[in-house]
Amino acid sequence: MANADQITAARHGHSRPHLTNGASTPNKSANSNFQCDVIVIGAGFCGITAIHRFRKLGMKVKCFEAGNGLGGVWHFNTYPGARVDSEVPFYQLNIPEVWQSWIFGERFPSGPELQRYFEHVDRTLDLSRDVFFNARVNDCSWDETELLWTVKTHQGHEAQAKYLVVCTGLLHYTFTPSFPGFDRYKGEICHAGAWNQKFTTKGKKVAIIGAGSTGVQITQEIGKEADQTTVFLTTEEQLQVRPYYPVLFKAGRQSHAGFPSERPPQGMFETSAEERTELLERLWDVGGPAFALNGYGDVMFDPKANKAAYDFWAGKVRQRLKDPQKQKIMAPQNAPYYFGTKRIPLENDYYEVLDQPNVSIHDLNSAPFETFVKDGVVTADGKVHTFDAVVLATGFDSHTGSLTHMGLRNKDGTDLKDTWEDGVHTYLGLTVSGYPNMFMGFAPQAPTALSNGPTCIEAQIEIIVDMVRKMELEGVRWIEAQPSAEKEWKASIDGMVEGTLFPFTNSWWNAGNVPGKKAANMLYVAGIEHYEAVCRDKLDGWKGFDVLH
Ligand code: NAP
View 1 (cartoon, protein in one colour):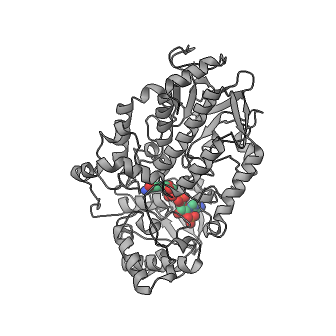
View 2 (view 1 turned 120 degrees about the horizontal axis):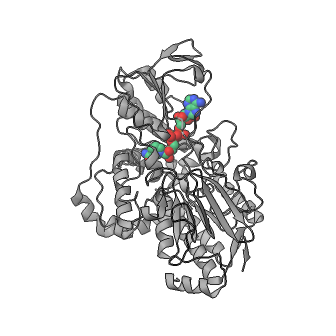
View 3 (view 1 turned 60 degrees about the horizontal axis):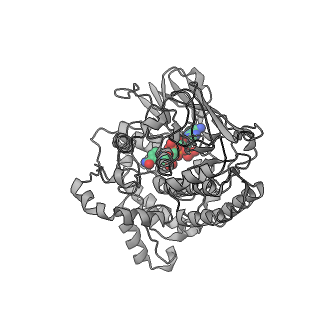
């Protein structure tokens, strides 16, 4: 592996006047108009990892972030009850100086705790000096003569760099369905993905629309009368485990989903009924992601095994709901879709809260919205539901939303939203043909949504940084994915979901949650370890890339 000095030496060995090094870059204006080596867009886990790793490579890196703080989704999703469902220690950056000086207070950290964590990350790595906050990118173009990306923001920044690394995440651009008559509604409206801190629900009659992970967390928080049950972690517990963090992080990286986990070797019905029940009960009691990650592997392939997993889950849910009508809606006899083909939300006492008399459930499958009115909504069964405020937990224009709303133009000047109109194409989930020297982290056609975010991000950013290191050492001026390699990539990831139950369900996982958007497999379902091995093999000899020296 090359170090920072080797990279700088290699750079100066090849005459590329546009490329600057950290020490001598002449900023046209210190604040808003400058050149650097790498421009990163977005300062969540992915952008932070990129800034840190490129700095270590000795490159001058600057970042544009639309929010006024670090954290990405954890900066914007500040709704009551926001909490991660990946447990400590896995949901954090694998950067020793950061984890050695931080203790989490909860097994599944809350939104406010994660915000404090990002403040700690900032203090430890001194990130803010390289991040422009409140800087929303609205134009990115490639100059074929200078071989530079120019990135502009809505606020007037303009920067140039040889490399563009887009870290804008899967879930940034909020989705609000076009409800009939919604403009007639005069009460308050708040979307969970862009939470307004001034919005309060106390003492109000609130309608929550959406029952994904976000809707579950909000309902659990604002619907309850009792105090929330939180699973706390002591400092001692964490200090005892901390010496093993490097081993745990490594095991996460070498796993399928970013958590070291193992499934039984047998299928669901290859074991006796007693063994099956014993395992399912044990995993249920462990909580967190154990039921999904350590259960029988054929649940995602075999409809019969899938039904058995659903029946077990539904039985547990029915026990927690006394109201038979609510039981029927929340845990019907027949699963509305294959179990696990939509994200299983983390919850503590969601069903107990739903069971409270102050919470009513309306099943939109039996009676959809007919029209919104001034103070509520009328449903197809003729019922009028009145309320003071609507909380929209209706999700995001997932996977592509952020990438197609930032003026990201290819070398011919065409916006990505147009080049992807007929379908998403990427190579390795990291690059796009027509976009030389542009890399994406946590973007479509990679393990993303099925994995622990920071682990997948770490693997991807390390690959991107190694690509850039290799380019610099080999004197490569640009690389660009070949369209044929993108076709092969798509065929290979689509081949992975064939035979699974994933293609039968539309959700944000396949971008089928937004009407009019073409549903397609967006995920690399074979896991992080497999993904990384395949990507690294492609780097060797630049397979699937056009390369200009
Ligand atoms: P989501 O999973 O896409 O859920 C959106 C919800 O809105 C669904 O219940 C959906 O119903 C409903 N909906 C959509 N259009 C509707 C319409 N026209 N009328 C009525 N309902 C409509 O979005 P999300 O809950 O924000 O979660 C997105 C992802 O963010 C999660 O899967 C997770 O990866 C992440 N997240 C994680 C955490 C955590 O770590 N704990 C917390 C929150 C979010 P249908 O399903 O019936 O279409």
